[in-house]
Amino acid sequence: MPYALKRFLIYAALILWTIIALFPIFWTFSTTFKVAKDVQLGNIIPWVDFTPNWLGLRAIGLSPDTIFTESTPRTEFLKRFWNSIQASVGASVLALILGSMAAYGLSRFSYRWKIWRNRDISFFFLSQLILPPVVLAMPFLVLYKELALLDSMVGLILIYTLSVLPIVIWIMKDQFDTIPQELEQAALVDGCSTWGAFFRIILPIALPGMVAAFILSVILCWNEYFFAALLTSSYAKTLPVMVASQTGSQGISWWSMAALSSAAILPLIIIGVFLERYIVKGLTSGSVK
Image (cartoon, rainbow, N blue to C red; front, top):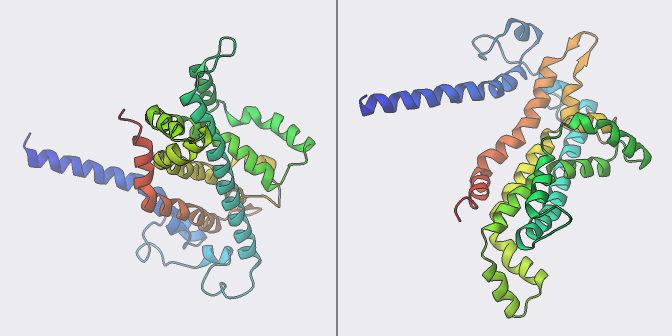
C-alpha cells in the first residue's frame, strides 16, 4: 500500500472517530437552543435545520433576557453547581491526603498480618472498584441515617472520598515505587525525620502523579450520580441529580436538561483541554523504571 494512501486512511479513520466521539457533546450543546418541535423532529444543524432559541438557558436563568434579573431557577442552578464543586474538590483533597500516605506506606514498608502482605493489601484497595455501588446502597443509607449525615455535604464528601480513594492509592503507589529509596536515606543522614523526608523530598518528585490523581478524582466525583441521588434530597443535591430531575407531567424538558448538562460538561472540557498534559504526565511517569 502506498505511504500516501496509508496516511490518508489513518487520518480519515481518526477524523471519523473524532466526529463520532464528539457528536454527543455537540448534540447536548445544540439541544440547549432548541424548542420542543426541533427536539422531536431530530433537527441537528443550527440555522439550517432550526433557528436557535434561548428556551434552554432561560430555564436555568442564564439567557440574555433573564441573567440580569432575579431568577429562582438560576439561584437553584448555582446552588447545585456550588454543591458539586464542594463535594468534588473536598473529597479529592481528602482522598489525595489519605491515599498518598497509604500509598507511601505500601511502597516503602513491608506489612504482614496473618496471610496478608503488601500485595494483598494493594489488591484489596483496587478490588473496591469492582464492587457495584448499588450493593452499598442499603448499608450506607442506614448508616447515614443513624449518624445524621443524610442530605449533608460532609456525608457526601465522605462517600465520595471512599469512592476515589482506591484510584488515588493505585496512582500514588506507582509514583512512589519509581522514586529511589536512596534519596530518602540521604535525607535521613542529613538530619531529616521520616516525615521531613516525605514532605521535602518525596512529595515534590511525586507531584505530577498527585496532580493526575487529583484531577481524575475531581472528574469522577463531579460525574457521580448514584450516591448523590440516594443520600441527598434538597440541601446537598448536586448538579447530576438536578439534570436527572428535569421531568414533569408533560414529559422531559429536553432543552433545560441539555442546558444543565452543558453547564456540567463545560468545566470538564476546560480541565481536559488545559490540564491534559499533566494527566498524561502523571499517569505515565511511573511507566519507565
